[in-house]
Length: 168
Image (cartoon, rainbow, N blue to C red; front, top):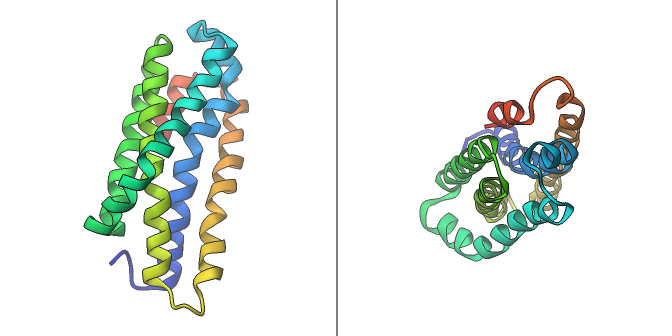
């Protein structure tokens, strides 16, 4: 089991979405600097985001099976391991290939977050509280987006590579 207190449970599930959303929105927020540093075309910048969402799409069904087999907590550990690995790969990129590899790994990581957190809501909360718990959990996505947008400003003080290492 993830935790025993409902507040801890919902906090963990919400935070999983915050952490999962942070990397890709950070790529978008820092895109002008990343594009210039890596010498990317506008199309290549778009493909960084496409690679993330392609991996998320491909990984979604197997990720649900993974959560069913190993449980919510273990699946979220795998998810965050992939998110960390992807962020570190991205931080070390010096060309398009490395950058897109990083976003793809991050996308596979986030593909595990969605079914795992949904299963967490379904198994950890009573039917009477599930929709409310689901609503709270989903606030992690826009919260992650808002936090990531701040990286667009932070990149004027720190390198995008350092920001990705810090996120990892």
